[in-house]
Length: 141
Image 1 (tube, rainbow, N blue to C red):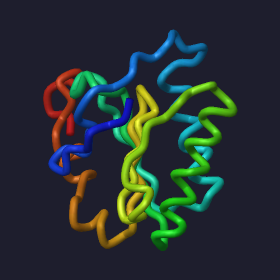
Image 2: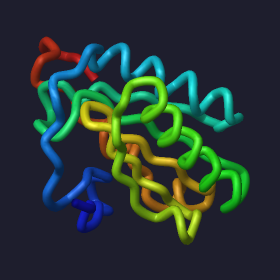
Image 3: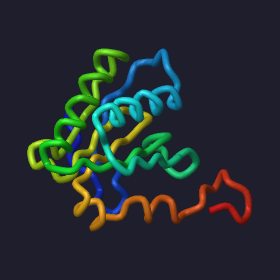
């Protein structure tokens, strides 16, 4: 099953998602492995966003940049390969052919790898970081 597309307004996958088997790792451990993988591949401006309490799609979103279309695609490919090899996790992806914006659905962690110009245009961080979590107390940002 393949993702039908991502919603440019939210950056979240849209369409059917395959059921995941019970994992031997937590969402926080998965996030740490995702961050380690993209940092190993020299992703730039890595931002992690806690989605718990804001979305039922995933617990975390990671946004990062590659310097070129080739690097964006390579970061995504390596992440997908590592998640399968290390965790047995089959990640769905979209956008690798163009290399401007690749969405990787790793279950509880959604990853966006952008070329800098495309990232600036969509400004997903502004959308998600500007909204306080309902789980956060009053005055939280």
